[in-house]
Image 1 (cartoon, rainbow, N blue to C red):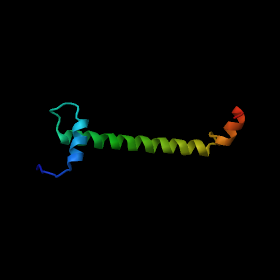
Image 2: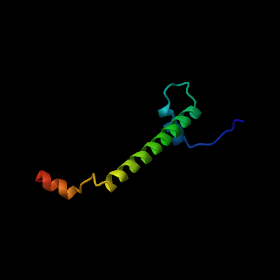
Image 3: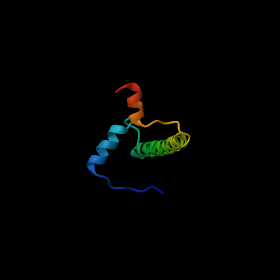
Image 4: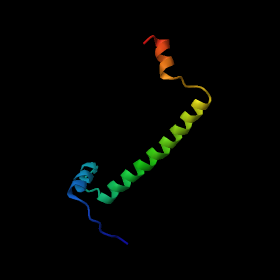
Length: 72
């Protein structure tokens, strides 16, 4: 079942800018944006988990220590 939604002129202009082709529908643009957001979220979650493991393993140094080592 299809439905119609109301969006502001400003949002319509932003969606128009994101179209790859003139024939691409706003629905396709929105699906692409949602897909990108989900991928980023999963990737970010993975990177956060990896960073936490590095901290637990002591593989990171405080900035102050790095500055001292580099004589900054």
